[in-house]
Length: 477
Image (tube, rainbow, N blue to C red):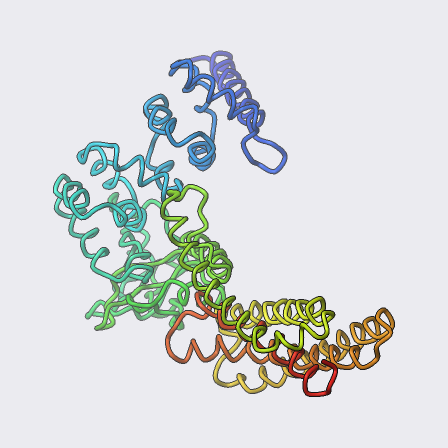
C-alpha cells in the first residue's frame, strides 16, 4: 500500500471517528447526561418497531450511557431495547446497569445466554448479576457455566452479602517473592491468560500468604537481575474476606489505596479489590444511610412499587405510633389548654424546633459513626460538644421566641415559659441525637435505620411536656 493510500485510509478513519464523537456529543448535555430529545428519539423508534433506527442511535454511546438509557425508557420498553441493540448489549453494559434493571433483563433471558454473559464478566460483576436471582434461576444459570467459572462464582456466593468476599475479584497476578524483576516481566509477557488490567503484582511466600506488592511502575524501572523481595513494598493493607464492604471502603479512603489483597481465614491470598469497585460502594453507602434515616427504603426509582410501599409503610406505621404517644402527652394537659388557648397555638413551635435540632445532630453523628470519626475514644468529648451546641442554640432560640411571644401577646410570663421550654427541648434534642445512635451501635444495630424514630419521639414528647408542664407549674394556665 502506498503512502498516499495509507494517508487516505487514515483520513477516512479519523473522519469516521470524528463523526461518531460528534453524534455521541449531540446525545449528551453539558453535564454528560442523555438529552431528553435523544431519549424521545429512541422511544419513538421503539414505538415504531424500527430496530435499525434504534441501533444507529445507540451505537455511538459509551456502555455507561447505554446503561443509563435503560433506566430512562419505560420498564415495558427495556426488553425491546435490549433486542434492538443486539451486539451492543455487551458485558460492559451489563456491568453498568442498575441492579433492578439488570435483574429484569437477566430474568427474561435464557439461562444459557446469562451464563455466557457471566463467563465474560469479572467475578465480582458476575456475582452482582446473579446474587439477586431466585435460587432456581441461579442454579439454572450456574449449570450452564464452565466448571472453573462456576466454582469461582459459587465460592463468592457462599460469603455474606455486602462482604469483601462478594466484592473481590479473583483475577489478579501473584508471584513468588524470590522471582527476579526480569523473570516477572517475561512471565507477564508470556502468559496470555493473565488479567488484562491490573496495577500491582502481589508477592507471596511458599504458603501463598501475601508478603508484599510491586507496582508496575517499579517493575518497569528496576534492573532485571534484582529479586522482588528487594524492591517490593512490604507494608500493605490486607482485607479479610468476611469484612463488611463499608469497612473496606473506609480502608481504601483512609490509606489512599488503588487495590488491596483479600485473604481467607488462614491468611492465604484469594482475591483483590480495586478502587473502581470501591467508588460504587462509597456512593451506595452514602445514599443508603440518608434513605434509612428517612425510612424511604431502598430509594431506587427503579424498585418495584410494591416493595417501595412496603418499606415506607412500615416506618410510617411506627411514626403513627409515636405520634399517638406524643398526642397522649398533650391529652394530659387538655384542661390547661382549654383554659388558656394560646398554649395550643404555641406548643407545636417547641416540639418542631426540637425535632429539627435533633435531626441535625443525628445526621452529624450517624455520619461520624459511619466514617469512624466517632469511636469509643472520643464519645464523651462528642457528647459534651453536642451538649454545649444544644445549650447555645436553645438559649438563642429561646430568647428570640420568648421576646417575640411576650411582646406579641403582651404576656411576659408566657414568653418566659416558652423560652425555658425551648432551651429544655433543645438540650433533649442534642443529647438524644447523639446518645440514641451511639447506644444502638453498642448493641450492633445500624443507627441509620431506627435512630430517627427514637429522636423525634423524644423531642415531641419532651417538647409538649416541658411547655405545657411549665405552664401549669408556674400558674400560667
